[in-house]
Length: 254
Image 1 (cartoon, one colour):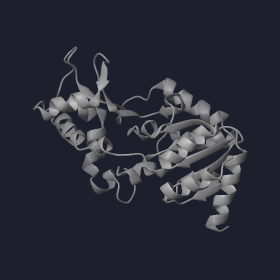
Image 2: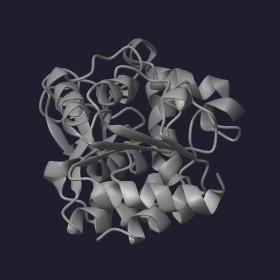
Image 3: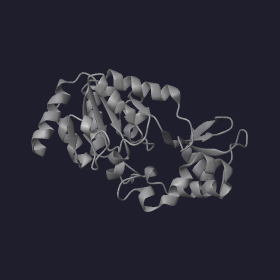
Image 4: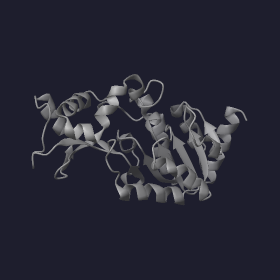
């Protein structure tokens, strides 16, 4: 089937769907200037040592890892990133009343910035725009803590209890929030069309939404530049670019 015919077919499926669930990964944000992790030019591909900064065990045990993490956060591309056409396509899908949920592995907050409703966005790995204390659980705007780092605090502590601060995101070795994962899996069970966008589908339990949705009778469309382990389950594969293909398939809705 030609690429144009595949796009037309996916458009028709979206048009017929009642509850579309979208599972997004880092690939949807690369056109906003935020690199992915595991792709050919991914952060961890180019610098495997950077993965250590995302391990909660190293973060808690080693002050130097925390200091390096805070230095890294100062220059994170998320602070200046803007939603791209892929994000805006999902806002259009919501406005047409077809979007049941966005389950996102991203921590950049771009779905919310684009205009998707907070009650429809399930951030399974948290949000970089918040800081949290690992001791007392106090949360606050990340930019307030980064202002302290810029003022000279290399490893800022919680102002309430003196505990360790980090971004309100899930690191390696840190437990996912059970209620959030259950919401994501419930959305996968309820959908009649699962659209996975820009995710390698390597991280579980979220990647399990694909076989779960399929088992519950949903169509599955995978939009990703690289092959995934679930390509054989998909009804259609779109290799991107995401910021072009996603608006094309959503534009034909309604």
